[in-house]
Amino acid sequence: MTPYLLTPGPLTTSARTKESMLRDWGSWDGDFNQITARLREGLLRIVHGEGTHECVPLQGSGTFAVEAAIGTLVPRNGHVLVPVNGAYCQRIAKICKVLGRKLTTFEYAEDAQVRPEDIDRLLAKDPSITHVALVHCETSTGILNPLHEIALVAQKHGKGLIVDAMSSFGALEIDARRTPFDAVIAASGKCLEGVPGIGFVLARREALQASEGNCHSLAMDLYDQWVYMGKTTQWRFTPPTHVVAALDSALTQYFEEGGLAARGGAYQRNCKALVEGMAKLGLRSFLPPEIQAPIIVTFHAPDDPKYEFKQFYNAVKARGYILYPGKLTTVETFRVGCMGQLGERGMEGAVEAVRDVLHAMGIRTQAAEAVL
Ligand SMILES: *Cc1c(COP(=O)(O)O)cnc(C)c1O
Image (cartoon, rainbow, N blue to C red; front, side, top):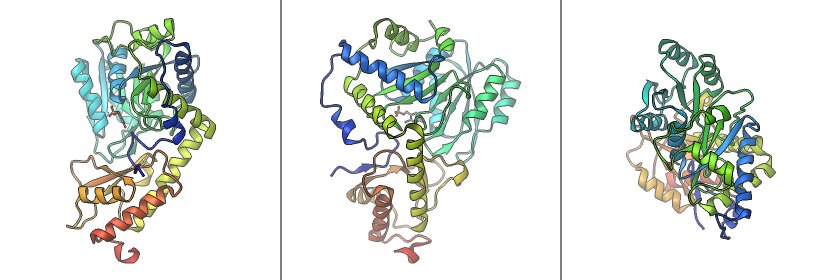
């Protein structure tokens, strides 16, 4: 048995999604191009962006799509404000630097949400800022940032908003009819439960139309990709055909299961079972529940000298579950994803595996005596 992936992408996909990759497609073939068209339309439907927004898929991991969105939508003399409360925000800041876009960052602690009133003040203070780039769910901790409120602030100031919604898209609501944005970016191997290999950008049509010539790069130019796809129904350059077919299958299953409400609900239940189950084992989550997104949970490592992440990880893996290391610099943590197919025993199975491993390693936690 391959272990379940409790990681925020790649994650464990359904058998049907895996099976969808057992056939080869020609990238010029009409049947494949129909898949691409259906995919773009379905992705747009998730944010209710039909008629107002455009879906531009791009080969590569999620970061490729983030870099492409910044490079395409922010003019070369643009100025990006990046509120930072985790590693993925820092990555956006680094992209701006590498691309030579003027950058202003505003730093928060890793357990503090981005505050709309700060964005309001910063935009009022510096009118040269053209865009705000926000991470919706900061996967490095699992914190949720208040996208809707920040979108309204950006709109009030007439600024573009670029959203890295990589780990929230499809599970947490983003509605283009009420939340204004220039771009929402996500990828195939996250909450939609496809396999990794493509990212996509849902861009406001006027913003995309105005972006011709902005991009520093040929392959990362979303404007060019969009125009080419519009003309030919094909991808510019070879698409990862199996990944596209898998995402199409995953998306069909997503809609069959009830779309965003069902996916978000399932992750919410996973998250609750995880946090409650781990609490019973004496493992505390890093974030308070009010700001915790139901996507990935950061736990404090057990405060016991016998704990060592790699050994803990390997033992939990031997019991069928792959955990994720922590990404915090200040405290020792590990992370557990709430996404993906978790099998019949669900999250309870994962919590049991952790319990057995703590016991086998002789690790004591605050609640250990009561439970083990
Ligand atoms: C996964 C993820 C990305 C993309 O990371 P890749 O390693 O390029 O797939 C970007 N932002 C967030 C918030 C993510 O969770």
